[in-house]
Image (cartoon, rainbow, N blue to C red; front, side, top):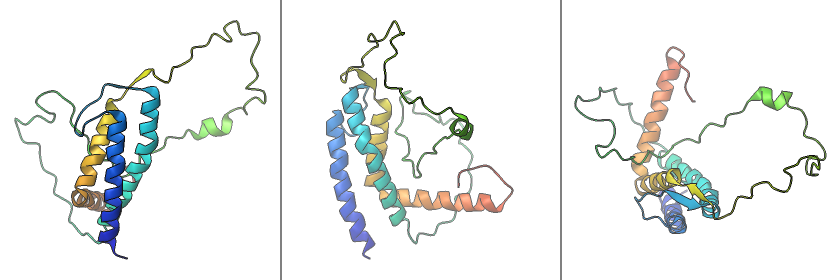
Amino acid sequence: MDWPLAIDRNREALRRIIAALFALAGLAPGGTLTTLPRHVFHAVLFVLRPAESAVRRLIIIAARGLVLKPRPPRPIPTGLAPFPANGGLRTPAFALIDPLKHFDPEAIWDAAPPPLLASVPDFHDPNWGQREFQSPDAPISAGLIARRLNALQRALDDLPRQARRLVRWQAKRDLALKGPFRPMRM
């Protein structure tokens, strides 16, 4: 298969999707957001997760056949601040692997089965019918969505660098697995 052609085709399609997400959120590339209406937040998130997954697959394809040695650890230079000097948030690195899902096995096996008539109103509840309705236009904090969109854009613009990051992470993981046991993600 012609992998570079497949990467280029899919990269262009993903660029259009990401541009649409930026437009939907009303965000300029590299910009920040404070809030979004609830319905827009969920619409962006609905497309953002599969787009991130598709970019991860492109990075894995681009990393195919790359061989790099892990970088030696280096100390933090003195006098250099680990965060931006302006106090702002920096764009996080794109997550090369899917986030872990947290399951509580005890809660799954020990939980009581849901009641059969859970959708029937409880007429003994004095507040029934007065519950708060969340408007679709209610604002939701969107700072994390903006940072994820910017990280996704940066990763898609520089796939070879992300592929090298993935190969270095894999080499570091393999080296750690050979040594004494150290809890880390595999």
